Length: 81
Image (tube, rainbow, N blue to C red; front, side, top):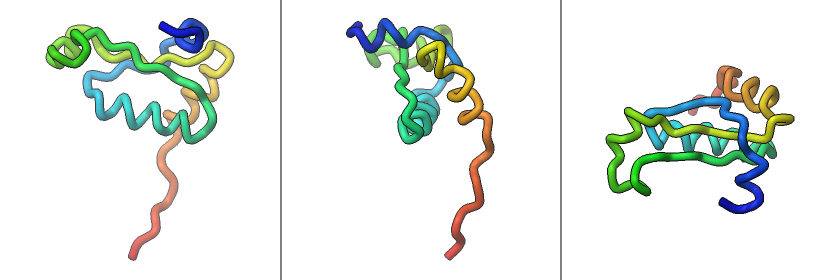
């Protein structure tokens, strides 16, 4: 784990689906909050392990409140064509 990974250690969410984890990480990234996904699934070779060991989304402790608020906020209105 690089230096960035050592700073990011507060778990704010867990996911059984890698797709959901990446969407949540993208929301944080779009709002300037660094995050990291911790997986224990044999580097993707055994995705069923995600059910036993969920994917953890981690951020810096000082960003944890803002990150949780962002992920708890419902999406805004969308444009209809």
